Amino acid sequence: MPKFGAVAGLKPKKSKKKSVSTSQLKKKAWDAFSRYIRIKECREIGKCVTCNRKLTFKTTQAGHFITGRSNVVLFNEEIVHIQCSGCNIFLHGNINSYTIYMLDKYGEKKVREFIKLKGQILQYKKQDYIEIKEKYDKLYNDYKILHNILDTD
Image 1 (cartoon, rainbow, N blue to C red):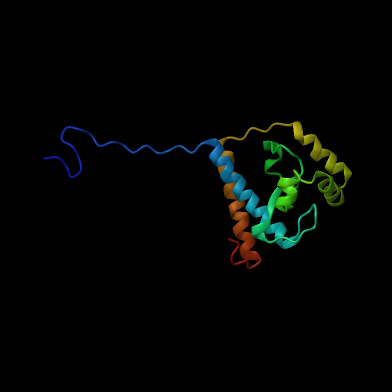
Image 2 (image 1 turned 60 degrees about the vertical axis):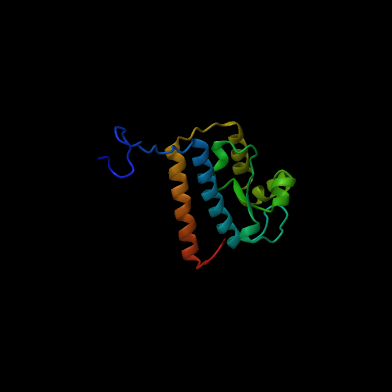
């Protein structure tokens, strides 16, 4: 007599684990990184770095100083800062104002180093994205605890 749910003479199918794609892991890592940048800078700066518009956590975006979002700059905390959607999306980063902010914050020598990163390529593996996500999830949660932030959603 076959076991409950089994068809006589057939083996039960083994469930296949769905493999998570590299692009899905990259998105999850970016979401964790972006969330950390936004909570930290929203509390410390509280305004768009390019137009000075006051922001809340829900209205912030993590905008890159170096355009293109190549992997070498994607997760660089010194190159990603909070912006409003108007500057980040509609003004394509509002690069003139962003440059002034970066020069004031880091100085010309460091900004020149950042600009040189644009053409560089960094290849991440799946495990790298997993580790980046874990790192920034922990930083985000630790930051919330440290500053007694109850809700950001």
